[in-house]
Each structure stands twice: as C-alpha cells, then as structure tokens.
Amino acid sequence: EAQVTQNPRYLITVTGKKLTVTCSQNMNHEYMSWYRQDPGLGLRQIYYSMNVEVTDKGDVPEGYKVSRKEKRNFPLILESPSPNQTSLYFCASSFQTGTSHEQYFGPGTRLTVT
Amino acid sequence: QQQVKQSPQSLIVQKGGISIINCAYENTAFDYFPWYQQFPGKGPALLIAIRPDVSEKKEGRFTISFNKSAKQFSLHIMDSQPGDSATYFCAASGPGNNFNKFYFGSGTKLNVKP
Image (cartoon, rainbow over all chains, first blue to last red; front, side, top):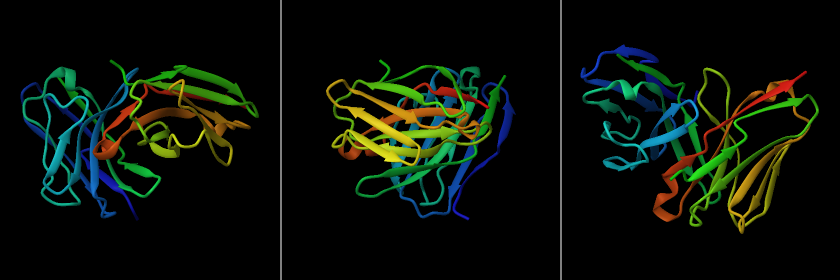
C-alpha cells in the first residue's frame, strides 16, 4: 500500500530535550515536506526537500532541522524544543507531472512540549 | 504577510445545497492552486487543483473557479452531502524551482446538515 508513515504519532516532552520525528514514504517520490498545523493558521511549511541531500527552508523553519540522506526518509529534528513548538506535524511526499503536483500526507504527529 | 487568505472560517450548508469557499493570494507568480480536504484525525488529501491558464476546472461535484485578475480562486461543492463535512484548505505554490514551496490558507470547516 502506497503510504507516508510518521513516528511517533503522539509525543509529550519537556523543554530542551532533543527529539526526532521520523517520516518514511514507499512511493519513490523525489519531493518531501514537513508542515505544522495550528488552529486558525492552517498548514505552514517548515522545510522541504527536492531530492537526496537537497533541502530548503519553508515558511517557518526556525527551531527545526531536517536531513535527507535517503530518498524514502525525511526526519524532522527539534534540537531544543520549546512550548511554542507544540503542534500537529505532518510529513508529505509528492511527485510532479506536467499539470499536477499532488502531495500525499502522513497521518500526523501530535507534539506537546511542556 | 499572509500569502493566501481563506474565508469563511466555518460554513454550515443543508444537504443538497452549494458550498462555496473563497481564497485570495498575494503573489502573482504562483502557478499551482490546489484544494485539500481533511477529515478529523487524518492528514489532508488532494481534492482538486488548477493552473492559472484556465478559469474553471470541474471534477464531479467539485469545481474550482479561478480569477487571475482579481487574484482569487474558489471551491464550489455542488449537491453537498453529509460525507463532505470536513475541513478544506486552499493552497498556492510556484513558480519554477519554488513549485514545492506551498502556502496554505487557514482552513474552512464545512458542516453539511442532513
């Protein structure tokens, strides 16, 4: 089954404790992204990747790191989480055709930083 | 500055009615405008998308209307059904190498009453 998986699905942590949220896709997509979703703000792109070893900042990259060492994986790293990073996080992978650029989203990771 | 503005925040429609959600964008260089549908506890899923070289695109009961001069686009759901109750997000991306850089609206929660 074609899918994007994220782990963990739920995470409660404390301020300053480094954490990693994993993302993996089995569709051989070149493009991957991370988003955060907050009430009233919609989805905001954190980082995106065009291919292995190629990443770029989205709209809200501060406080986050990413890496793309393999095509299928795109982990999101919070080196020193703060309470304002409490949010619902989505990973997405995508491909582009001539007229479409469909993103497939994972199930989400709900992060709480106390 | 918010790149994509979406309204209304919430919408209640009777079964069989027409649901209309509007979005306005700032950057005239955007060249891809998707709509995503999100059910509670799930990641967003692509519903329909349009490029600025056409003014309308229809897929089943869902239609995008695009007004390039006004920098606006809207989603129309004809014959709305209770199963359409979800949160809808508009988005924009592009151009060129920025095709994977997405800006989302704040979302519209649609409730279709039986």
